[in-house]
Image (cartoon, rainbow over all chains, first blue to last red; front, side, top):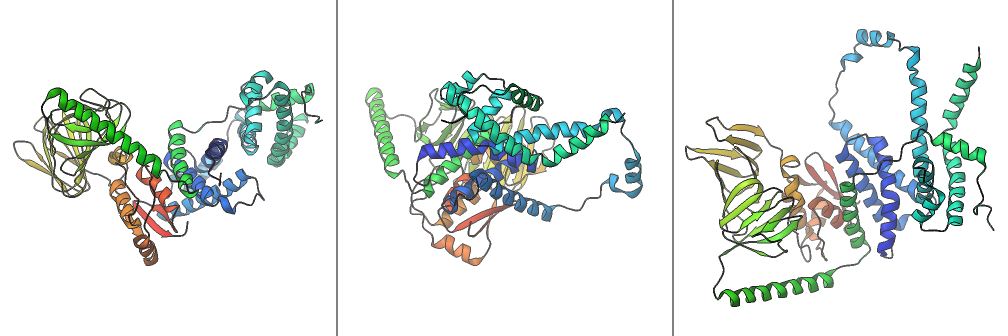
Length: 197
Length: 323
């Protein structure tokens, strides 16, 4: 990219923009203008600092670090401008009444949360993988494409696609395993608990 | 040989993967418009940083376009044997489906009096013969009687008097006259809205004039109801579309401060320097090259080639040292 190769720019943008956008959205919520601004500034800074990138961390990790700093600066700016607001539900009496409400056991919000969190972490893990690994796994297990279709999408032969999938699965397990260490432990505790008569 | 090659998967491991992914939705894709906008801006920035300039390519293209226009003009004169109607404006930027006299205009095309401009789903920026900048939003229909006299039949126009050019916009609900200003006029059915960013505007309704000051939006209707006044921000909302279709700014050989002041004028934000040294750098730096982007992406791209950076703080653009 530093050698002014337009294909390298396209590969950089196509490979990282969607992943960085999702990374920022998770942390910024659904404010589209701020989200666009932060992602743009992050990529812009990355391009300007590309000469200083030494490859000690994966490029996406490096981009995420820049993005985190931008989000942090943004939040600090917003906090400076935000007026202190007292919410009704924070008044001591109201809060005690709200805290006393118990949800019906059938709702099991913890279970719903863990299910959603698992799905989200799988998406995060896919984004952490090299783009073609994440895409190949998503095509296979989310969209249900055949290996032949995946081979066509990757522009490689059948054997090469099988090979990409195998390596992608190993990489996924490594990343996902790291991300979910705590979640898995919590799930195990719960499963043991539910087996008790 | 790698153990990865085309080996059938372990059925148990495969079932585990399918089970794990059972609740997973496809990852969301960013909005296509955002992606296109950021890609374009970043590409220009990268292009500027990695040193390539498109001077020659642009010069050749501009020369060729000028030659074609000259030839077309000569052919028209020969065919009609007389000079056409007065030129009231030229096209500085066009986006999407815009028609002038029933044809799609090219950059630099001349607009003549009495010719109908219909923007359909597109947008167009015009340089009036008297020096003012007029931009038309989509679904807008305008005809010029002269350089400073336009008739708005429907839709939204933006006018910037820049070097003091005046304009008079006729609508069925009154005549909008500027007094050295930036304003937007929107005609929708029986309602005319005028928002002013800088200077003053008068809406002449026959029975009397309604003044609109900077920071105000005034709506008038065809009935006898009194005009409605509201606050109008100097950026965003009413002005976004006009910012996106801003005519190009030639940076080559210009001081950075000129460019920054252009960004300030186009965006309606206030330019500030974090310290005296940043302002001195902006005055001393002379820009080289060419770039054609919307004002904010262009600000990022231009500053990337200098020792300055910027931050947005509410309605302020703060220029500071470093990135």
